[in-house]
Amino acid sequence: MKNTHILIALVLVAALLMVSCRNNKKIQSQELSQEEVQEMKQALADSVLAQIDTLAEQFLDASSQTFNLKTMELTKAEIIVKPDYLLDPSVASTLVTKSQKINALAIYTIELGIRQLYQMPSNDIEEVIAKLAADVNHPIDTDFLTSDATRSEKIRREYEICKERGDIAYFWQYQYALVTEISYILAQNPELYFRIITGEQWRAYCRLVDFKLNAIKKLAEYDEEMAQILEFRNKYRVSNPNQEKERIDHSIETVYQFHIANKDKFIAKRNALLQ
Image 1 (cartoon, rainbow, N blue to C red):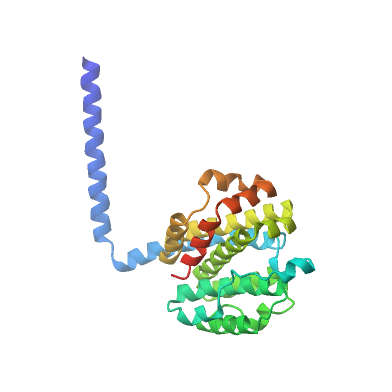
Image 2: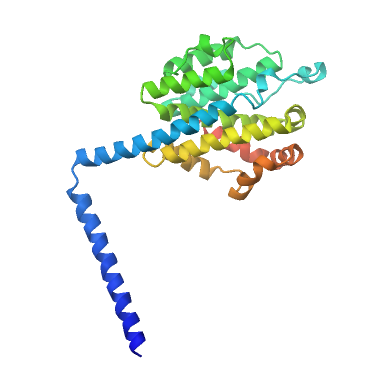
């Protein structure tokens, strides 16, 4: 009986302490000035950015090991059947927000590579890319985008410029849009693309995607734009968390079947980037 009384007393004390702590936190938050709140946010941002730098280095290293759709080789028979799933250049003129334009820039950049892969004319797309890049102040100019610099060199330059100008959110938003567009492209013709992507290249690509998602998750702790990207990703998630954890070990055949089964989801996700 005594033990029961003691237990009840302990529960009551614990409850009172919890209420007290909540009230203290409330009072403290009310007493914080805007400057103090800003300082706390900046401290969090500095801490997160230090972690992002580490992720970025791993990301940049991995970027040289994955596949590049632009440099793949098709047979003459495959080149004849042109893709009908590319975004029309005219869509760019209908976009209003900066976010839409960043996403469209990523889409057209990937699709420029697809056009080159299929030996299609690309002048109109190059003009659209140049216009969008100017509109959103893309961190590297179109000359550098089309130069002989390696992909890793281009990505590193983008990251360094974004970091210098305090706009690291731009870098990761653009990178996320690239991933979304690549998934869309792969789902359109998995029979073709997963014939020419090796297992090693796919594993490197999965590591690349993981670095991007981890960076966005960290930045979302204080950055509203990154939080919105995280919400978008959760809303249009194609694979469940367990599948994402295991995807690096999936065989090309498994990945191929997954893209066939989820084609509509990949299309909806990519199209939502422009809404």
